[in-house]
Length: 399
Image 1 (spheres, rainbow, N blue to C red):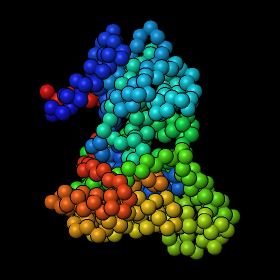
Image 2: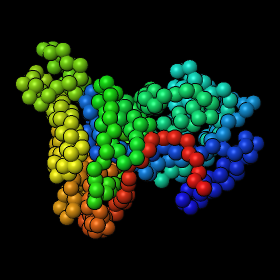
Image 3: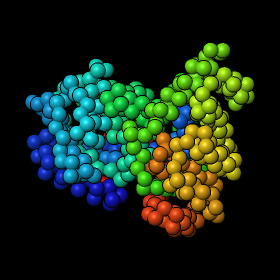
Image 4: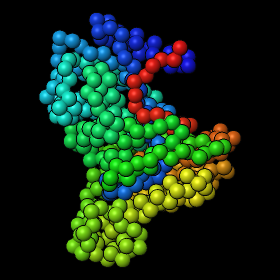
């Protein structure tokens, strides 16, 4: 409990240095990151995903600014960037604002949805969630900003609505055509549970993480995944191209609607061989996600781990979104004692792996995989032992 009080004290001191004390005591909010256990690049294909919110995240101190229509934002993780100031309404994307475009995009989307800020706003961020690692730092700060606006100004936002507005900010304001998974997990996550989500309908259920004796270990390649400059949007377009071909003979709404036998029967209709591989991943990964959620609910960790490995191989061979760093971390993990499963997590092109490791072998796993990776890649990875956490919310400091 002392750690949270120390963190709050440091943030409060910095907030007062930057913004003064006229606005009274700022409120504290927290938003988690997320790790996807399985179900990658299925969300925008109308399939299922199986993420959980994690104990790493982003914090915000926030206070309204009466008598002004200006927003001031500052991150203690990016002190060199200084403080960004912008109008509370009519916001437009500006590349030079960097990370601040994500929270500002949420304020613009809230305005468009009929929830303009009635006053100015001061926001200070700090997080222990590594940026560019594929753990949804962008979704975390987006949902966090929506929670701040709702908490301070009483906008009456509901959970799923919050996730959709945050996604819209990233899609339309930032220009990253992500699916709903990240924002949904960050909003709706619960402690000790994974979120089994049908991205076509937004129906979901919380599945207890039956991981007794095991821990979730995240391995960071230290190769940032830069989605806006990657082939993420191209992968989405390739799946849409495959879907257009399929629709010439069958009224298919999304690739997630197809079973594996149904896809195999229709696959000859897809003219472009690259699009065929992309679609095959989307369909088979959706089935793996269904099977994995069932296995975890039955505490069948062996099956769950085999499905994780198959997921990584499909992402490597059919979807081509891994990289030498991700492949090295996954392959090293597969050879370690006590590892149930390992795979890349997130959009790929760098970022992180997720690993399920026997609790008493976690230290050995980190030591041996870290050493092997450094020998192959010439740089050291980072590891985080994470727990499934609650979604974004206002925080009451424990006494």
